[in-house]
Length: 442
Image (cartoon, rainbow, N blue to C red; front, top):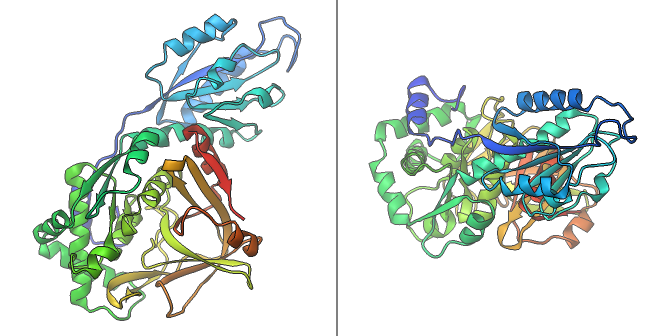
């Protein structure tokens, strides 16, 4: 964790308090569909299906070490397929590999309502008919595309083994829908519990974090060293709470609680550190964005960050604005970009982050809306880190094809989660396997 940013002693303390992720492998049934030996069809009569199956199974195991593949006999009758489904109450999903025509009777697999990745080994035909409520389709000569889609089962398994801490004084929003659709547990905590953890946080370690951030920053503008130290204490408190409760993400109703004098420090710097380290810290108790951040972190190995997008139709740009963002946008082991420590923008208090993120890069912005079983998404290319005193401190501008169309078609609230890279296919696969509608914006 935090390699290259924090000193050895601080890094060791953080690692000891970090929550552990489940190491349980996803169990995936591997089903091949192809004609019986000697039957004319695609690819051709006499094709070596046994050799091809052995090759593909081996490549899948090597490319997806977090998955245990359970091969099934090639079904020749509807009864064969029914027996496979009946025996699979505990598997996490299916990979249905189409190797040739005429195909095996496997339509009941895709119609079962269970998550299925259907892979067309090119010139195997028939993929257009393989539809279902939770089916993702892959038809590519690049095996990496197949492996990426199949690894989604590992991400879903990790989500089902994860927990979110939601610090909010009131009823949590979307908690039930998250638990039902993702299997991720939401633990609701009060501001008093967070404040108690703040009071118990080690003062010495807290100050070390504050000084570490000050040294790493390109510049510190408004906050005092004491204020940044309070942010360090809030980070240690949140990290300890994650460790004690075995959770991987924390969302805090920060604006409401801080404005009301219910929090001693903003969590912005703590969120920045958690997100850099492969965990999730999410603003404003936004559980939709929190589960989205957790999902993209598992699927891509990179942090997402919440933003308030602002559309500029004159430049065909969208600006992703917020007072916290990571600096290791390519993952915990990636390089770090420069950052400034600023006050929180709206009230000019506390400490927050202005992250100067890489330009000329494709980013993907999205949000899962569990209660509506919908995911919205778009991609853009980063062009500027805007320096403007209005609104949030981090303002990453990106070019989009049609800003007016994006503006007119915007739905599902303001927030989006932005992650570096073109992850459209990944999001489409996640959405399909969850049974979500995928809406591409703009």
